[in-house]
Length: 321
Picture (cartoon, rainbow, N blue to C red):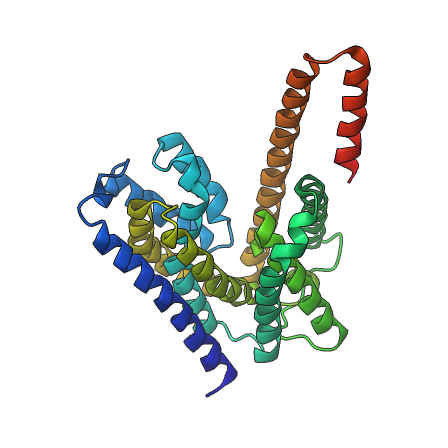
C-alpha cells in the first residue's frame, strides 16, 4: 500500500466512524428531526452553495454562520456543533477528489497533513492560552500583506509565484512547522484554508497544491470533533443531513472546476480568498472590541472614579497580553 493509499484509507475510516454516529442518531430521532426549524429545500440549496464555495477555499464556517443566524435555523447553543457536523461529509468528498486528481509530491503532502493533525491535537492545551484578539489582529495584517504580495505579482510589480508541486530542504521544514501552527490555531476558531493557500504560494508552489493539503488535513480533524458534538446532542440534525446530501453535490461541481482552472485564475482566487478572510477577521475583532468596551462601560457605572481608573488600567493591560 502506498502512502497516498494509506492516507485515503484512513480518511475513509475516520469518516465512516462519524457516519455511524450520525446515522444512528438520525434513526433514534427519526420522528422529530425533520421538524427542526427551516425549510429542508432552502437548507439543501443553501448548503449546496456554501460547499460549492468552500471547495474553492472560501470558509464555509463564516458563510454558514451568517445564513443560519439570519434564518434562525440553528440556535446559538448548537451553532458550533452544527458548523462542524455539517462539513464532515462534504469535506471528505473534497479531500478524496483532490487527493486523487491533483498530484502533489507525497512527502510534501504527508508532512503538511501530519503536522496539522498533530498541531490540532496538541494545540488544544497550548493555543487556547493565547489572546484570540491579538492573534486575529496579527493574522489580519499577515493575510493582507500576503494578498498584496500576490496581487503585486499579478500586475508585474513583483515576481509571480511558481508552479512546483513539491518542495524539499528548509522550505519543507518551514512548511511543516507552519502547518503545525495552523493546526493549533483551529482550537481558537481560526481555519487553516487561507493560511495554507498563502504559505503554499509563498513557497513557490502551484496554488492548486494547497487544495489536497488543506482538505486532506480537515478530513481527519472534523470527523473527530463532529462525532463529539453528536454524542452531546449539540448540533442541528436537519441542517447536517441537508449539507451531507446537497453539500456533496456542490462539492462535486466545484472541485471539477478547480482542477481545470488555469493557474492565473487560481492566483486571483487566492487573492480574493485572502482579502475575504482578512476582512472577516477584522470585523470579528472590531465586534469583539465593541462588546468588551460596552461591558467595561456598563460595569464602570457602578464604581467610583478611582475604581473606574483602575478598571481602565486593567482593561488596557488585558489587551496587551
